[in-house]
Image (tube, each protein chain N blue to C red):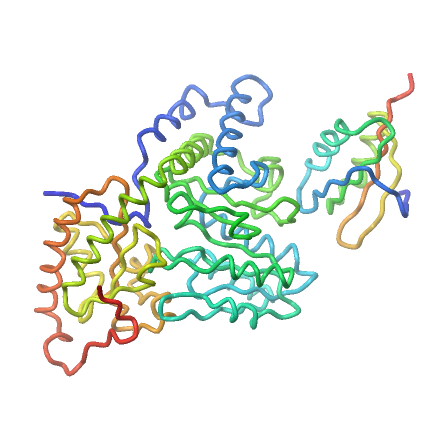
Length: 85
Length: 399
């Protein structure tokens, strides 16, 4: 897992205590609202997101920048990117 | 025989217009709101319409309303959900002694989990003093819960002042507004609360539908885990007919509140005036700062249960204490906390009026009620010179 510091997100969404699969639904919903190149920060305490969010990025062509462990929850950073054909 | 329903804090009859709004979702519109095809989409639309209607009633955003199965579930959800979400910041919560069992028992559950709970005292009218709230706050306090108005004595609590104390200290404030929402103006922004519980059947909606307002940005641990209903915060396939009914009831309550309030208050004041002529009957709760449809008394020398039975035989339906304590045959903890003696509290009786009550209902009640009291006092050992004096004392607010 890639850990990052000082990433400046354009949009933050807090889904701490919201269970699976809210992390994927909110991720998709919020990414749609972003412009290409913008960074989304998702705060979640769901451990399954460690696997799911990088996997979702891989499938959808968005860039998974890494995570920050804030003790009680994780912060995931995703850059919206259109997949190169 | 005339039938007079005076127990609107127990529940309200379903408004016919609400019933009509619910009907399609029992049969033709049976879709699951999570399904992506047309019937599912229509069920989803019904829920989102209801969410907007409920939000409009309490002046919140639609996204801040989470539907539940009842006011009790909303109370459990609020207390446990917030206490658990903030337990790393502190493990102390504050509740008042006026609370419903769904708050008090949730607080006791949290005590068993290692939380400290302060139970706020109240004065003779049932008011929580905001200064007492302030003094009860510790570095560990994360949540305060104070009822908006007591269903037992009708007193409306000074929530705005309590909210100011909570805000100053950065503490979350929840209110159980089950008895007030849909009956008097409830505005989450004006009240300054972070969470607010409500129940549809208290404003002519169906049983089985409640809601919790959760201020945007507030984290809350779910009470029920499962699917993604209610934005992942309350799982379980939605009770679509009941939710649609709650929405319609909220819309009607908002539109008709002024007329309903004027009507019930006029009847309630007539009831007050009539009952004030009966000796040794004491009003409980505050005489003015109370729910407009609410009349509660302690009748000396006799028991509430006996009054209820004799009144019911005359077609008059009322309550003694809360709906729960009425069954448990216990002196109401709320009345005891107001300083009313256990023996006087046994004589508790509560009449709560509704939009469909009439002048004739009140006149009938005022004819029958004094006769019921007289008959019971004739057979009461307490009224036969056992040396027990009238003890209304401080709670006497006769009109």
